Length: 444
Image (cartoon, rainbow, N blue to C red; front, side):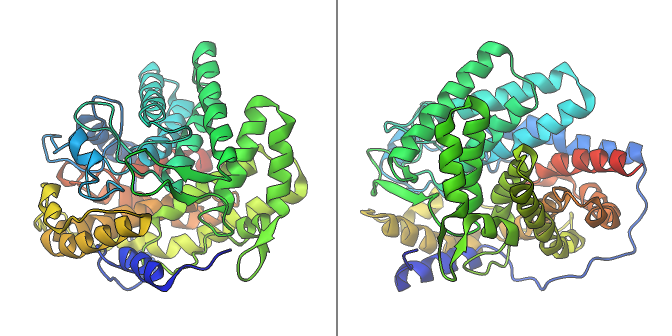
């Protein structure tokens, strides 16, 4: 795998470090109050209701942040075309639509499988429709948008692999759960085939728009935790959905292909679990690969491959559990300033002529954002991180890794006052709760 240039590496490390408070790792606190099933359900429902009250927009896309009334400053088409605040659309409320819709579909599908209520089917369908919209707004084949501007159709100029992978995962999970009607199912599979074929034609690089400063924004064809599981999942899912032998051949070739430093196969990378090339203080993006490994484990019938995926899921859970206890540090009554007006960051905008330029502008803006919006640091480090790590724990096939931390995870769900949070990134509370219910049934 091609090594990063020093400047690029420094920028990426800065983006990882900044904007997130530097908290020491915590051991899990064993003394947590007991939780009754009724109260636990009410806590989860509060999170669910707040997501749908404030954060799912009129396009059925889950946004990043909003005020207490659910209002937010949506970028204009001109701003996105001018690559403001940056070509990636980072630090705006529309930064992660395809990622969040795809991942949140997991929670809604788990909810429907647990309760079989028509209201949940309708919500799942809305999220799927939002994903299909984001696959239609670009002007290049295979592009998946992050969100849309005030015109309802113009996206930020760059997507990424951590936006496109959840796009596939969410639609696959929706189909796998048996929720869509036959015609809707055919439409979704046709779009997934279209996008997958386009990405195969680029060598699995992610295309951008015609107004982007770069033709592509990263790739699935890497030998890392942020590449290998995602590529294998897409190939396996496409074979499962289409029964086209092409995808199975590509899947098996990709699984055993080796690369990186040290050299490992993609299958071995999955088996090793959540490890990052650049160490991260916070690892929430690891979920987007972990859910793919979980899907691979659910689909796979080959004993050797399935065992590798199981090993990786269990290893990821062991790694993630150390950060679940971060919720103890979050004070619901500490209301530090939150910067809703992201346009303030445009004073550090510069024209961008490459992917690296976009990353550099984003890094400069993040330095200022950390200072201007300390509430952001609180929520991302102490709300998002423990809930997303709890999600990874609940994905472990070995249920003995989950049950000892059940009270701790339920404690996190119960702790937060969701109507006070500016960010939507608490949405995994729902996924965690329903997966814990499913795990409890297995234990009984």
